Image (cartoon, rainbow, N blue to C red):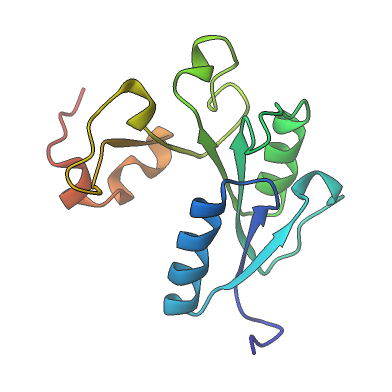
Length: 146
């Protein structure tokens, strides 16, 4: 369906199923080809790749040892490196920023925030300063310049 020159977003095969489901819906809506692959198996990413996402730890509980290398390869291709990280796991693991991620996202549900009749619940989205002004204002609300 997608043309060869269509932008593509790559998600790791071991992302949480609910994450992959949301990605499928959003990518289809904006005309981005979604490729669900083992991101660690890529030696390089081509110019159609707009971003790469992996779960940290993944849906099987495994922690990628090659996250920094993946981020470097993604950035070398001019794409965004995105890590969906478990905030509680980050108390023991390196932060997405230390691994070279451009964007970090995750759910805060694991801290016991009660669901409001099925949602929504709290989440976080963080980025490097380079992309801070491109974050949606309705999500972020208010920013303060240093």
